Structures are given as C-alpha cells and as structure tokens.
Length: 116
Image 1 (cartoon, helix red, strand yellow):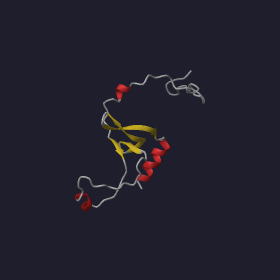
Image 2 (image 1 turned 45 degrees about the horizontal axis):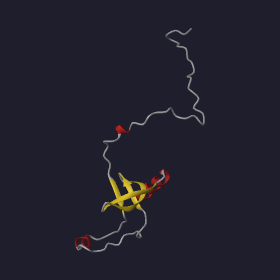
Image 3 (image 1 turned 180 degrees about the horizontal axis):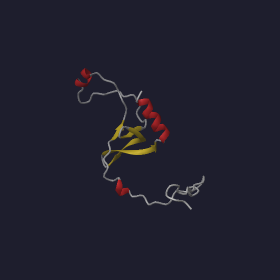
Image 4 (image 1 turned 45 degrees about the vertical axis):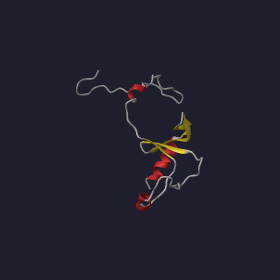
C-alpha cells in the first residue's frame, strides 16, 4: 500500500489503436465553419508589366498572359492553390467549374516555390 510520501506508480492503460483502427464516427458539423470568411482568387494567368504600360491600358487592349487559352485555371484560397478549374457560362454569367482538387503534396510544393 502506498503512503503520501511514496504514491503507488502504475502503468497507464491505453486502447490499442492498431494499423486498421478506424476513428470514432463523428458527425461533421458544417455550421462551425459556415461563417468563416476566406479570399477566393481565380487566376487565368500572370504577366509582368511596368506601371507606365498599365497607365496606357485602354478598352480592347490585349494583355498577354503566361498561359495558353484552354489551360486550367488556378483556384486559390487564402493564397494557397486549392484546385484547378475551367471557365463556364451559366445564364450569360461567367463561372468556374472545379475539375480537380490539388493534392496536399502539390499544394505544399507550390507554396515552397512561391516563397523562394
């Protein structure tokens, strides 16, 4: 029996998590994130321009981008590449259809190359 000066030490018992153990079923609550504001950017392409060239822009002026027509668009959320998509027209309005979600490893690689 242990006294206050020398309490009994016992090993902790943890459940076996094993290789194939599934996490407990938890119903996702989308309400927790519905009101979080994010910045969504759809990028057709990029170009470098001098301020003088920007000031000389007029309606109808064509700006050459670093992508070809028909290439997938980048869908960026809070500055991080999330998906690829394509332009669509819905009831005479432009929209974007997601065609693929970028894998986490590709997102991390894109962030690391942008920071260099």
